[in-house]
Amino acid sequence: MDRKALAAAFPVTVPVLMGYLAIGMAFGFMLQAIGYNFIWAFFMSLTIYAGSGQYLGVTLLATAASLGTVALMTLLINFRHLVYGLSMLEKFRGMGWRKFYMIFSLTDETYALLSSAQAPVGVDPRNFYFAIALLDQSYWIIGSVIGAVAGALIPVDTKGIDFAMTALFVVIAVDQWKAYRKHLPALLGGAVTILFLIILGQFFGQQQMLIVSLGVIVLLLLILRDKLEEKEEEKC
Amino acid sequence: MLTTAGAIAAIAVMAVVTFLTRALPFLLFDRGSAPPKLVLYLGRVLPPAVIAMLIIYCLKDISFAQAGSWLPQLISVAAVVVLHLWRHNNLLSIFGGTILYMILVQAVFV
Image (cartoon, rainbow over all chains, first blue to last red; front, side):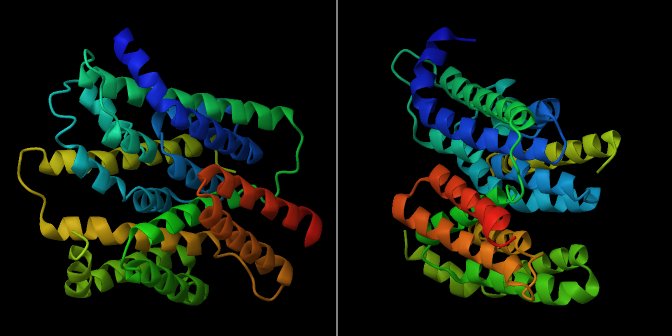
């Protein structure tokens, strides 16, 4: 590991250090609350490494969801990564074996840093990007382990702590609402899910209805493509 | 609770699917071919729709028959929105809302 790149990357990652320690600790805390200790927290943060994905993972583990549901829900929540990758194609070119790790570790926060951060003069940009990615994941792992250990040591009534996941999604939705000019996709997603998951889910089973909701949302978005595409282009 | 093997399997599935969503653009479009417009379009409009869907999914177990079930959720979601519009601080919004919810379900609507 290039020391100069590490030293240059550290100041850039300080905001993520704060955020990941806090959100990672909350994850570890929630995981401990459903009966999985710090070893589980460590391995989940090492192998999955996704903020909102691991929050969802706590719920999936707690409800003993089927592997099919686990796969579908993980796919849904990580769908936005598709857009991240598209804008990183150029940046990761020529990174050799480290490219694999760069793709694996492309979280929202790392993406945000990589999009804006510039390597200082004299530091190889590729080493710099790699150092940012590596530091970010180490904060996340440390935070989640601390949270799980704290959860085991501090006897608090954790009832209701799972609301952190809802809160996280609401925060993402508020940010998206402000970033997008067209709110139809968000409204459509909410309305279709209420109709299929909440109302029809009572009769046909919620797991199946979740897949149906997603299918209907994609279908409606495809039908409305002309209308939505036109409006989005005005932005450019 | 899942068996140890079941939990490891669930975590492995989460890890593999998460990696695939991150790797897909590189697998498909790294040879220099431009991504189809349809993919770019879905990549732009699907995330807000999916987040809205996941919020509803989180709230799916509330029962409108008892105030103790839906009022804490409604109040806390509103608090997260207001906090976030006001301070624009992710951590404050998430932890503020969660602590409020925990107080509501543990001490107020018991």
